[in-house]
Length: 278
Image (cartoon, rainbow, N blue to C red):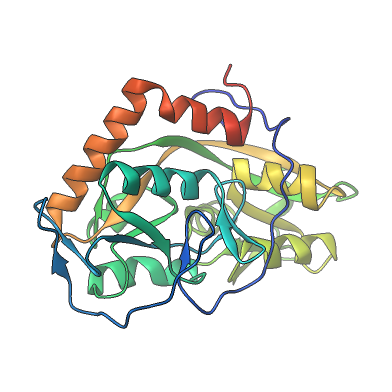
């Protein structure tokens, strides 16, 4: 994947974990418990509402390293650090819900009452914008396809065959691309990146289509007998998901993102999680 045109991962070595939590977890690892509050409360200092006063509650699947993961019962990754920094700049405490199914997050934010934002490497699409608001884009992205190194199907033509199965994470742009461009193959939507990659490694699936930085990380760190067979220049951009009923929060986050770009914080976060930006 191309992030800000080119990014390497030579300095990123943390592995993805599949642990699932049962309580709210703070971005900084201090943890916390759910208050049971479901009615939004107005922040006295800003023109937006929050599920719980003084907190920015985040929904994520936490299984998309190096963007987000759940290691030792603690959220980690670029998106997690981003959420933490945004909350800090808004004078709020950042807390994550336990890991959510990716395709449940947008409906959750739309319905309201459980989380203030969804931050889980969401590509900005017109279809999604019909349901929720996005903040300004904070990261550029492309798609990729991972296969076993010993696979005999490493191009689009070979994968677009009735004998092939392609794993995707349900509800993602990877699923949309696979269904459109590999119509002859069997597309298998699954809950998580880890399940998809494990299936490819075991030979259960012929390929996995997802965001390029994620499968690049998986092939380099966790599933080294797999490789990237295709890089797909989709030109996607990631944004944070906010309810259409909370435009003030979208505006406040956009200001925080702009300030982070201006003062160099965003560049430092990208270097920390992705390596040197060329």
